[in-house]
View 1 (cartoon, rainbow, N blue to C red):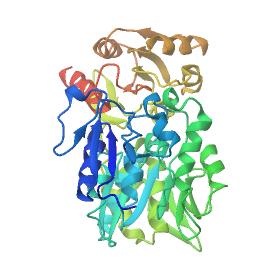
View 2: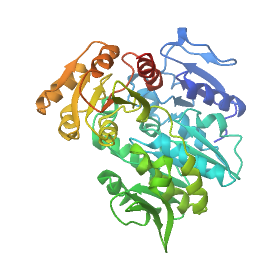
View 3: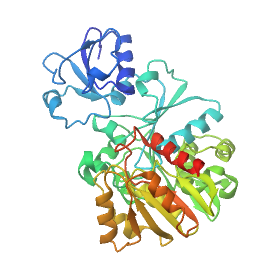
View 4: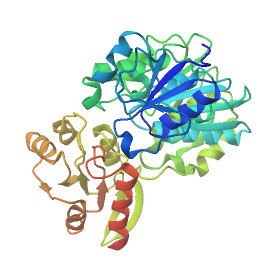
Length: 435
């Protein structure tokens, strides 16, 4: 579609909204903007502010920022007229570069960064974009056919996506998350499946063979399928003892886990997902090994802080759902105190406490959803649990419990008290370093 002089409304003035405004202005569109907190936002130049989001009688298209749900009542007239899309879906239509899309409940940021590092190490001009921080619309027009866009894609972005066609699509796993927005696990699963709907047999897809829902989605996908597994032999990347192997037409040794810093803690599945993707992309296995050998995981993914008062402290502020917290807890060696709580996402915390490893011997709870976490613990028969009003109180009391580790993994979003998981992670870091 030629957007010159077309009227386009951008709903949401966060990072993605501002980036897509710049893209629209470059292609000659007339840009209108709305934000629920418009009086608190800096207005970009050469746009028209409108008083409400229901602008469908005038606008040719409404572009939603990821924070805006497709079910928002104020945009339903535009939805009915098929005049709504999202920032990522809109930007993807302008890509001339190779397009690798990564999604999943947990691990997608780390896998995006790992793949991007491997590709850069192989000599490509590769860029990590999307939900990871730099909106796709920021770079879409400048990428060339020789470049590669490695794009982290969230379920919020898939809500407003009708048809993506990535050259490679990677699904790390699918477990319960964001049910406060998506309502049911089936809805959430169907959104993740949209990642593959535009692919045909010449494109590549990568799935977690150890994840039941991912395997279920793989059965309806038309593209060339590879898998990764910590438990079994697959077409793709798998673990054989301590050895990481890629197998397609022949078996290829990639590395031993012990030599890769990236294999530490909860990252093994991420390493295998990256290996499967990059080997399917025909990257030299030695480049994969060398890159993963030196890869530094992003902050607040079961980050080891150090040892004080006879305990090791771990910061997993990015553990924003039950499955992430379970993986983090399972990586702990020795008796562990868990600190959790924040803003809930509609998950059942009884499931968390039933599945926690036996070495989690005590839990401290704080945050907006503390009551539902406490109810879940009691229902599961986990009674070594205490509520405290602040994170600081939880932290200080955790230091006197007889245990080997203190793990901060909230299993909840940060938005009850913090701007994001990074600010929350820094708050926990500060408590540790002040101890």
